[in-house]
Length: 35
Image (tube, rainbow, N blue to C red; front, side, top):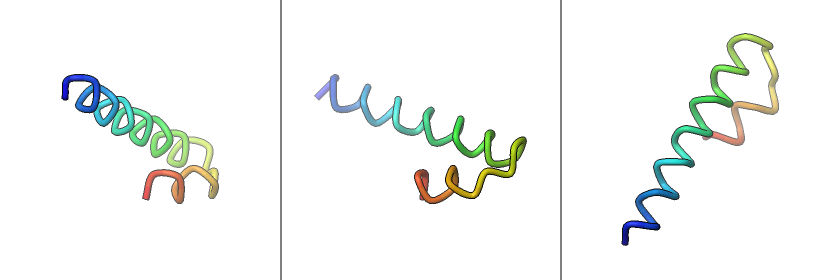
């Protein structure tokens, strides 16, 4: 359970990072990976 929660949290953080990259670098490939 704890591992699953940690993985989900990491996925959310990765998504946020990708979204930030999308905002800063306007990388079209970053957005579909999150959503």
